[in-house]
Image 1 (cartoon, rainbow, N blue to C red):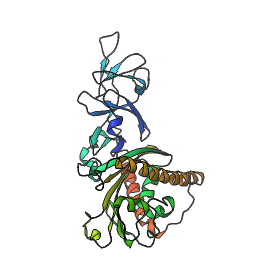
Image 2 (image 1 turned 135 degrees about the vertical axis):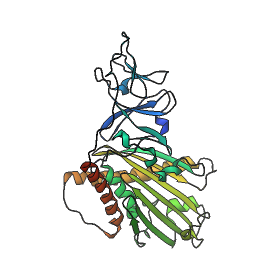
Image 3 (image 1 turned 180 degrees about the horizontal axis):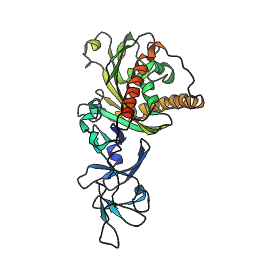
Image 4 (image 1 turned 90 degrees about the vertical axis):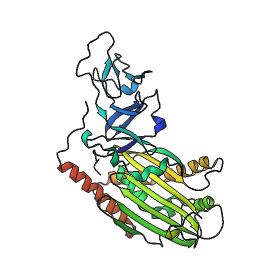
Amino acid sequence: MKIIMNAWYVAAWPHEVASGAILSRTVCNLPMVFFRDGDGQPAALEDRCPHRQMPLSLGIPEKDHTIRCAYHGMQFDGTGRCVEIPGQDHIPDGARVPTYPCVERHGYVWVWPGATDRADPALIPDIFERNDHPEWSAVGGTIHLRANYAMLADNLIDTTHETYVHAGSLGDDNIQANPIQVTGDDQHVHVTRWILDHDAAPLWREALNQDGNVDRWQLIEFRPPASTVLDVGVAPAGTGAQEGHRSHGAEGCNLNFGTPETEHTTWYFWSFARRFRRDEPGYDEVLQRKFADVFAQDSGAIEGAYSVMRRNPGRPVVNLRNDAGTIRARRLVEAMAEAEEAGTRPAADHG
């Protein structure tokens, strides 16, 4: 799948872009360096000094919230402007570093690699707000995935793999027996599955912390190019979860973003937010470990499939009934890529 440039991508967790520190990360084939400016806001620059092309990520974070190149000492602020050159007072007009729009929102640091004049923060998906919402508790992590970013959405939208990939945690033999419903438009794909009156999968039985059959829901929303959020959970069977009454159950939200590093590698940012067992000491750590294991299993499956795809490019595949959501999602991303390619897409305003 082609990389979309005119979009917001998750670049980092806020704690990774700490005050007085430098983070190097490649996004959409663009090496970037992230740090905090004088106002405490995240800034993103091209990871390259314009003098002798030394990576700025090897530089020195200064107390005035600038970066000093570790080669000849040129100093740059969060706008990419050179503010000091050791040994000379005159700063040439070209002594600037390309910049990328960068915003902190919903518990992530976002970056826009495309045309700067199109980087409207209002386009950042609000479906991620539960990542740092006061009524939810969240754990999360990052996985460096050796696969194209579209493979991640494939995995997350079609949850039938849980029976086999996540046996012993989320896996449930009832998943395949309950069909999905797929709806959407030119900006969204919604996939809905309800599994009613059944014995809970191990992880959900522990989350609910009580015995008896449950009603389970998987309400998935995909937004191109790379956002996939799953409202998930279980409630005691017959307590009205399907009608929206879920306070009796364990209500969770799995938030996922697949940021292309290159065409063949992805930064997978995952989190799991919940409104159950929030005040129980140590439960965050328990869920952190459990879901880290779950998403590591996903990564192994995705990378295995992608390695075969690269070995057999263009080889036809068979689609199944439960692929309806993933097929629709891929079409949205393809349409987005075609529209970007057909337009007069200018390069980003990089100084």
